[in-house]
Image (cartoon, rainbow, N blue to C red; front, side, top):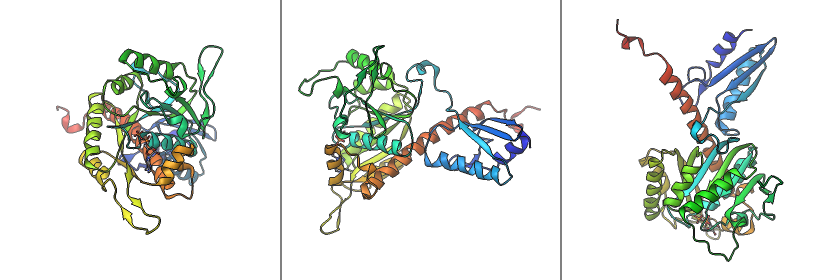
Length: 360
Ligand code: ADP
């Protein structure tokens, strides 16, 4: 067995999203053969995402059919060097944003983080909503961060997720008026002075809106992609559009649109009620050529879960739990697409021009 044999087998495997095979897309970083031992390093970036897990299984099966057993590893393609010093051990930073408050942004952030952790990923949740930091309550965090000897903060863990919040730093009744430089400083502290350790995903609950505060945060952190949360109705979608514009100005990738507070199914009569209209999130995503990440129903259990500190994504029997699990899976999948597309684009930028372009 030699490297060419292995490479040829990998060439038979298609990326389900990018319409080409793994080798041509540049997704095979390295093949190492040592006697009978085959080790393959892949350019995959979204740990525990359904698609990348499936790609890895297909590789194992294809090779196993030829009697080859391989060890697989993944190396996230390099990030921009200028921001690399911030959160270097975090593979993906996912910002959850909304054009305005009250659409369920924090609820989505909490369930996304707990859902990714439930899939097996190493996750952090950073509640950066300086105006209304309520994530600790939503996960019933019972202990504040601990100060380590070197002055860093050790975040508490809940539902397998490391948690940091402005709520740990300010008193409940202490109204804080935030100005740009203060926000800059506190965000820098909360990212750099916190022992996040090695994370697959750091989910950030951004403050609602599209002003300077949000911009400062996007400038400070190496965001892989943003999830925009909206309700289906048109006024909320107008605000979501402003969110899109803010990310575009900042060259921040938008992973997709999450619709919250969609249909309510009455538990008495079983009828569906579209309280904030229906289908608006998906239409909006279509119009703007963005992935639609999923629709979360209005469900009193979601609100109760938030109040009692028990994210519904962890409830196997709840329909809304399934909706959140699908959302988490779609966010992970779209994060993977962003990385793999970057790799494929840089490979195609390097490849020689096609023959007909060469002057004879
Ligand atoms: P935001 O972060 O956008 O201001 P929150 O996540 O704090 O919004 O949600 C506002 C309130 O609505 C909370 O009490 C939350 O529990 C509730 N809520 C959010 N999403 C839903 C939903 N899909 N069904 C029922 N209640 C919800």
